[in-house]
Image (cartoon, rainbow, N blue to C red; front, side, top):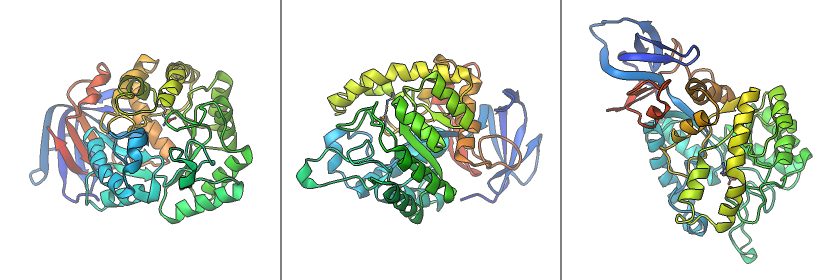
Amino acid sequence: MSFSEVVILKPKAFLDVISGELVVADLLIENGKIKEIGQFNTENANEILLPDLILLPGLMDSHVHLIGNTESKGYESISESSYLDTIYGVENASKTLMAGFTTVRNVGAGYYADVALKRAIDAGVVPGPSMLVSGPALGITGGHCDTNLFPPEFDIQGQGVVDSPWEARKMVRTNRKYGADLIKFCATGGVMSRNTDVNAKQFTLDEMKAIVNEAHNHGMKVAAHAHGLEGIKAAIIAGADSIEHSSFIDTETTLLAIEKGTFLSMDIFVSDYILGEGAEKGILEESLEKERTVGRKQRENFANAHSLGAKISFGTDAGIFAHGQNARQFAYMVEWGMTNLEAIQAATIQTADLFGINNVGIIEPGFDADIIGVRSNPLTNIRTLENIAFVMKEGRVYKNN
Ligand code: ARG
């Protein structure tokens, strides 16, 4: 939903995320888009004075789980209905937007609750970021994308469970039918799921190829969850557009990803949350045990992938930790080898590239007016992104402290 009036933003400066320059200029916003950059003193326009703020394009996160109650983990979470999860999603979406994230990709949600939330946000019913949504994630029986907490007599399985190429194609078609923008599938076991091994490949290469081929036929991107090397490799060969987590990726496979143009979406902050507050929040001991093998390796491999020149998006897995804290990952990306500008580019132009959208991620005439403001220079103080003072999405102001 865009806003038709003319608004002029008068900041201290804005960050050109391509060149890394701070530009001293005003932004003229019309019909929800950036119309002109320059010096303006228009009588009948709405001026917003932001003399202490540095503006940036709205941030993006390629891996969030907005649907659900962040506070309930493990067995506690199974008592909550999809309806309740969706209501929590409304609050989560608002927190995400107020933290400066104006576009996010939601990777996995039951009953198409993500499609519903996205539509409510787009209709202006509730505040939230623009969303790209996957619907139920595809996975094998007993895999990371199945539901493994119930005993067998309950006969419960995840909605995206498929066990052959044709079942997989049908599920991709079903997700498309109900409004998914992209497809998520699980190519290995995971940390947070019961009875799965992070190193085990899930799906055969044929199944992965069927998923990707069917999704690409419909113009949908594919995000593959993968920690272990075999699953990462197979998902890249199958043509996935991004590898989520990429924890045990090695140099050879990173080079393969570079050759194929595959993005790595590496959630290198969340480990500290899982191993810090995880146990008291109800995360299963089995998961904590797995996380101890993943967290540090993933960070080392992030540094290696970055130094080799891999395409890296900004994906956090918010939903494991509280929504609105997504920006805490920036400092980790800098600690593990990126410059401040590269980390900001990951969360703007790189993630926009992965999403396949070209209307956001840069402050430039013609782009959507998704603009945020911070109190100090993010090129020298990356953690200023953890305290967003101003949020505009599609020309509408949601926050102005
Ligand atoms: N959703 C992921 C999983 O369960 C979380 C992995 C978190 N750990 C990490 N080091 N990134 O597998």
